[in-house]
Image 1 (cartoon, chains in turn orange, green):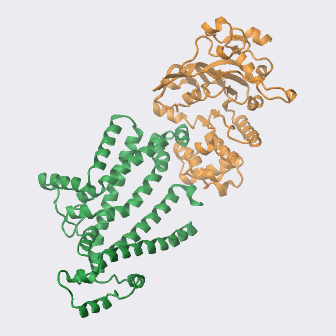
Image 2 (cartoon, helix red, strand yellow):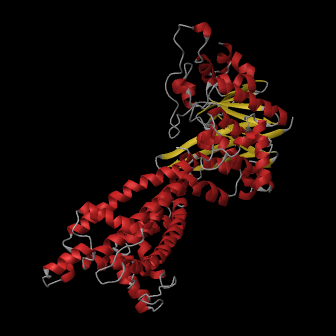
Image 3 (cartoon, helix red, strand yellow):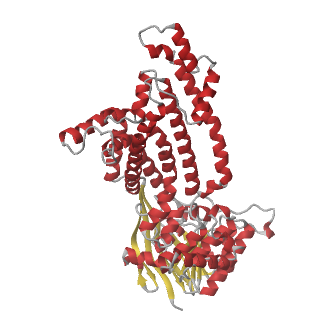
Length: 326
Length: 307
C-alpha cells in the first residue's frame, strides 16, 4: 500500500505571554490511501494542532513548527513555497471542522461557499460552479438541493450544515480528508448518519481519512487504526480491534474503562483521576505518571519511547507488558 | 423584505412628527418672532396684529404646527424674515452641503476602512500603534482647531488650495473642507474597522476559508471584510445626518454658504421659518439614512433578513 501522508517527529509550540506551550512533542503517524486513522485524545492533547500543521493553517504567530517533517504523497510539504502549499489545500487535502455553524461563513450562501472551490481551484465560471454546488449537495443527500443552493448556513439544521461541510471538503475529490470532531456538535441520531455518509464517500473515492475525536464509540466502526494522544505525544498506536480488546497503555485502558456499559449498570463509573497537564509545564518523565495507577520511580525520570509491542502496535509505557497482561 | 421596508416606513411617521413638533416648540420658546422682526423698535400694535394673523401666529401652538406641516407637504416652506422664500435658501444651501458631505463620507469610508484593515491585520506592530496614536490625536482636536490649522497650512502657507471656497463650490475645492469635516469620523471608522477585523481574523469561517486553499486576498476581501464591515456601515450611515448637521463649523471656516451656515444665521437672527424648515429636512435626512443603513445591514448580513 502506498503511503499518502507521513508525519515524522513533529513538534509544535505556541509562544504566548505566559510562556511556551508545547502542544505537539514528536508525533509520528502515517496514513495510506483509502485508510482511516483515528486520532484519539482529550482536548489539549495536540490532536487538532497536528492536523492544523498538516493543513498549513496553524495560527502563526503564536504557533510554530519547531521540528519534524510532513510528507504528503512523497513531497515534504513544510519546505514548499506558500503558494504551492495553498494549491494543495482544499484540492488535495481538505478539512472538516467541528462546528459547521461557525465554520461556514454566515453572510455567504452555501452555493457560493461550495462553488468557490471550483471557481478558485478549477477556474470555473460562477454559473458552472453553482451547478457543481447543486450536484455536491445532492451527493451528500441534502433534500431539494436545487431550491436550497441559495440559502444561508443559518437556514439549515445542524446535520444538514455538517453535510455541507463534508460536501465542501469532498468537492475537488481530495486524496486526504482530515475530519476534526465532525460529529461532536450533533445529536446522537444525526451523528450516526453523518459518520455513515463520511465513511461511504471515503470508500467511493478511496481517500485517506484522519478522524480526530475524543469519542471512542465513533471510532470502532469506521477506523482501521488508532493513535492515542496525550500531552502532545502519541502514547499508543494499534489496529482498531486490538486496542479495544487489549490496550497496551494505562491511559488507553483508563479511557476504555470510563465508557459507560450496560452490564455495569448501577456501579460507579470509572474515571481517570486528575487533569491533563498544562502544556506550559509538562511533567518530566512520562507525562501521564501523575495520573497513572501503575506509576513507578522510573516513570518520573525517564520518558518512555514508543515500544514495539506487536505487529503494527506501539505503546509509550515502561510497563506495557504488565498493562497488556492485566 | 418588502414588508420590512413598509413596517420601517410606518415607524418613521411617529418619529418624524415627534421630532419636528419638539423643534417647533423649542423655536417657539426662543421668543416672539414678531418682536424679533422689529428689533429695537416697538411695533405698532395694529401692524403687529396684522403680521400675527398673516403668519398664523394668533392660533394655538398645535394648530400652528399642523398648518405648517400641511404647508410643507404642499412644498411651501414659507418666507424668511428677510423676504426671501425659505425654499430658495434651501435651493442654494443644500447642494453645497450635500456635495461637502459626499466628499466627507468618501474620505472617511475609503481611508478609514483601508487604515482599519491594515491595522487590524497587523495588530500590535508599529503601523498599528502609529495609526492608533494618530486617531487618538485626531479625535481629541476640535474641528475649529484642525480646520483653521489645515486651512492655514494648505491654503495660505503652501498655497496648494484656495483657503476660501467659491460660491460654485466644485468638488476639488471641497476636498480640504471635506477632509476637515470627515477627520473625527475617519478616526472612528479606522478604529471600528480595526477592532472588527481583529476580532474576525480568529473566526472559524476565516480558518475554513484558508483551509479551502483560497488566496489570501480573497480570504480577506470576501470572507473577512464583508463580515467585519457590518458595524462600520451602520456607523457611516448614521454619520451622514450628523455630518450634514455638524458642518456648521467647517462651513464657517471655509466660507461655504451651506445648510450649517444658513442654520447658524437663522438661529442668530431668530429667523424661525429658516431654522424650522432646514431642521425638518435634516430630520428627514436622518430618518432616510437610518432606513438605508438598516436595509444595507440586511444585505450584508442575511441573518437579519427574515427577522
